[in-house]
Image (cartoon, rainbow, N blue to C red; front, side):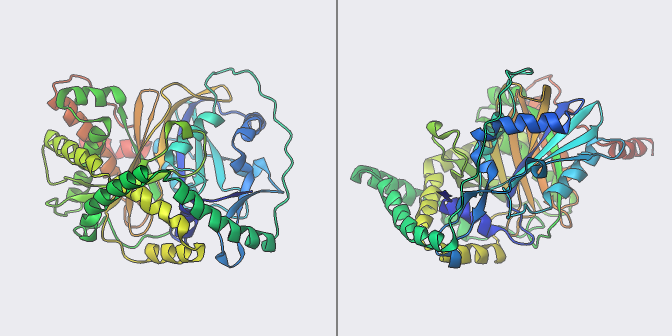
Amino acid sequence: MIRLSALDASFLEFEDAVTHMHIGSIALFEGPPPTQESLCADVLAKLALVPRYRQLVRFVPLRAGLPVWVDDPHFNLDYHLRRTALPRPGGEQQLRLLVGRVMSQQLDRSKPLWEMWIAEGLEDDRWALVSKVHHCMVDGVAGSDLLTVLLDRERDPTPTASRPWTPKAAPDGLALLAQALVGDVLVGYAGARALRTPFELLRRGQDAARGLLRMRGLVRPAPPCSLNGAVGPHRRWSMARAQLADVKTVRASFGGTVNDVVLACITGGFRALLLSRGESVERVVRTMVPVSVRSPGEHGEYNNKVSAMFAELPVAIEDPVGRLRSLSAQMGDLKQSREAVAGEVLTALGGFAPPLLLALGERLGTRMPQHNINTVTTNVPGPQYPLYAAGRKMIEAFPYVPLGGHVRVGVAIYSYDGALTFGVTGDYDAAADIEVLCDGIERAMAELLHAGGSRRRPLARRRGSAARGRRSARAHA
């Protein structure tokens, strides 16, 4: 039995009828799709590497302690591996609609908190694997690690026999309550022990103080716009594409980091979205940028090790190179400010608070109007080599980021085998136009390449057949 951390548990407390706290990915594979039997056999052989996939969450009575992971005595792999088919013509428009529907449904808390959907019938002889896993289990980096564990690095790997598994009996409510009282003491001790020396305590304190001073700007509300407001239970999802080689070309021309170039493209996308809505761009779009605080030796641990920085996307700047340079200067300043360290320290302090107070505080926070950030942008590095499922090569993969509070649009970025992909989540009712944001991201990359004198043409978006038809009709009008 393993106890959730305060951060892991917070993602459960954030969740309500309209806030779904699962992350996910949408992977496209060459066809034909594997049979249910072969895919189940492949996943079953690897479940021993990810024991959390056969465990469920048990809450402590009276919320007197942090929840715990216990084995699911009724685990059924077929419940978690599901199949569906896209309607004709099976284009990416149909895939986007399917992803939106799947991600609009909360995971069943009475079972292990994950699902995988095999979607057949994707055009060009492809199929998709839509996965969703609750944020209390993994953060983005751990989720990427998880993908590499469940998939294969070779088309025809050496077969692995599944290991026998017997679920361990879960403690009753009284035992959970008693263990929680002891566990709270140990959590506090572990948090204090993490700062092993006075010098470490002083250094961490100084870093946190510098970051908190920087965070003072978050008290000032961001300018109001349509990116924030009430969020419903349904989601839209779309994607954009780029190449890491193009990002490196832009870096070579204008400097900055990969993340700076990515944020500059996203800034161009939000500028296009606001202009299309008839809103002023004489402002900034304030974004939360999750930052992994996972050390290199911590890969393989499937939990949350994440903090955050807060950046201001300069949508007022029309020149794409000007946007990039503005962001490069700002992100360099943010790293020097130790904002992420301050966020990590504040998160760690949550381990000292009674879980009942944490739950109340987090639920209150999700219901109060949030005027301090407009969106979230999260960048997760993936493997730079091909992966396979049941002998089928994964052609590309896109991320999914949940929406929380009063944020209506979120952007996730994922890199895989030389490609850079963007997954955009929008509230179904308030963000029906996220395609404009995706188009703007790709156009911003093309503009940066052109400004640097590159003759490379960025990837064109693959639109659904209906979208292609509308574009053709407009061309002949």
